[in-house]
Image (spheres, rainbow, N blue to C red):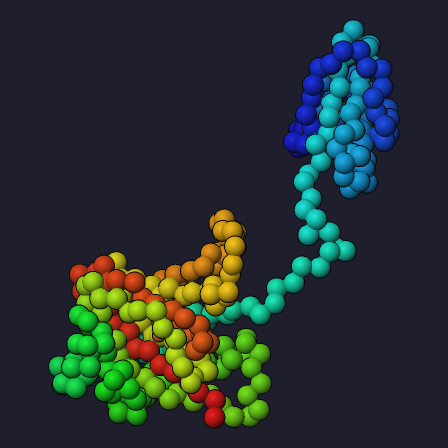
Length: 290
Ligand SMILES: [Fe+2]
């Protein structure tokens, strides 16, 4: 019965033979509509479907053996022009984003230590709390005060060590030619977002690859919202790609404790308001190529 999927039947007046491009079926058993369904008919070959409009208008007529005349219209599978091998549609300048579990033995233990130290840092870092009060209302970040935590704490240094293979993999996926000079972590800081706290739209200047490792993501904690880098140049652009991931102007990647996200530092992003009751805790970092 699969053959019926693309065939539409319609009864019609006497029409001895309307087939223009078909070939005769010699028996009822060859009838794609099933044995006994009707008299022998003509069927267009696959090649005829490829001929587009000509095949689409092909109609088939039955004999008048049963006293009924009828005809079938073949509705070929719709083919898009861009599926044609002679048409070349390329993806240029793709935006790549890397997401993974940090992984490795003892990852949970490391995560617990990071959480503990992040909380302690907020208590100890008076300068950071002052900076946050004017730049990160309601939340705490060590960005303005303790932004090299990988140098200050063995726990954050371990995080840096574990991130290395991910950064190398992402640089490779990007096809970066590093000319033998490795990417190095230059900044590493803590972010603690309480309920309602927002991290506004920004990018990370003077860096090559940036990212975030998620320490605590309670239910309702927002993901990271990435902006299409072409957005400020789009003029008279209709909405696109209904249902296609990454086709709209924004993509939100969920935040999950124990996971990380990496992106090129020029990619603008933000974190919408935290809807969770408890803080969303993350460690952000920059890598530079010297
Ligand atoms: Fe950021």
